[in-house]
Each structure stands twice: as structure tokens, then as C-alpha cells.
Length: 151
Image (cartoon, rainbow, N blue to C red):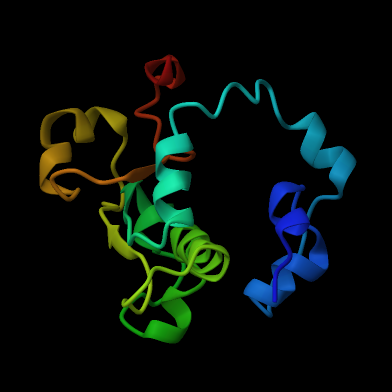
């Protein structure tokens, strides 16, 4: 099983492989730390973590473009759909915080291929559950040629 100390520390290759056996780290710990601009406070997500610790099933919404939609994988087949980033996050949360009485936390993929953040401004409510507990947002590729829109 996964020890509490492992859950509190940065993910190690062995921890990641225990959750997802095909996990491959592309970056070492130094490279990961150099990529963090601002870790910030986790106060806003503390309530989600406490819910998961108590065994409550949470709802996860993934919103974004083609990466979220899974356009590089055939998402109609469950085996290949597991390669999307949000499926990996859900798999990790299911392993670390299994909800009581359910097969896992709920995940809704609201990704729309070929769209940027300005598209979602107008219809995000159509691509997410009413009150998700955790929202994963990705617009790494389709920036509408205006990267400052993320600000």
C-alpha cells in the first residue's frame, strides 16, 4: 500500500508506478522544481483533500482543448483513454483517496478539440458538471494567438 509519508512528499518513480504501472518520468526532481513559478497556497483545495480523506467521492471536471479531449489518443477505447492527463490524475486520486462505496471518483472530460480559452468563456457551463469539486484546466496549445488571455 501507499504510506502517508509518500503521499505528503513529491511523487517518486516507485509511487507513480504503484498507481500507474506505465508511468515514466520525463523530468527529474531538479527540472520539476525549476518549472514551478509559484507553488502558492493550497488553502483553496484543502476542502477537497479533506473530503477525499473522509472517503467522499468527488467530481473532477477537465476543461481545455485537444489535449484535454484526448485527440492524440483514441478516446473511444477505455484502455487508450487512460493516457489522458486527467485520467491519470483521477487514477492517482482513486489510489491515494479511494471513495467509500464507489468505483472511484467521478470524471467528466469537457475538452473541445481546436478551441482556446475564449471559446469556453461563452459555454463553459455546457462542458462541466454543475458544481465540480476539482477543475483541471488546460490551454497549452490553443491560445487563440493571444497568450496574455491567460492572465
